[in-house]
Image (cartoon, rainbow, N blue to C red; front, side, top):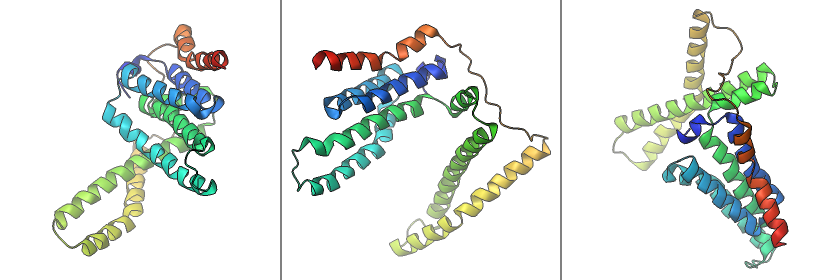
Length: 229
């Protein structure tokens, strides 16, 4: 999470991102999806101070997916590349993805869990979400450690032997992650911690004015669409 948005209430950040998401889903894809994409990019780079390298890396996956989705649409249209209907779904999906990814780069997991708890989501569901998040972190750590081991043990070898070693390490990945999870669980029980997860409250108070400002993109774009016809 960036420092600029660290002093915003989680509900304000959610309202801003979902306003962009609603605009991407409600407005026509052309040209409004590009407007939504520009808005989320300006919000991320200028307001939230996300590094351009991070934001571009985050957008790589949805951009690739949207670009690949155009190929079967071209096929159905007889490769009429200038048909506007081909780009409708990819543009809308890419703009909507940018709004959700903006929430991901500006909001921490603790803040999301806090909002879910305030929305009276069952504690078991919150625990499951947190465990999935911890599982992904553990998987990332194990993959990096295994990759370092592979580089140290086989710095210069053939491609086939390197692929064999990678396959063997990948086969033991799940076992290593589960073993790490069992160690963490045993450590928590040894400390007497056996309660549902209680998300921390945000350090900043919710501002009605800030919440109103965060929801402005949606009505502004809707009014612009109505005015321009």
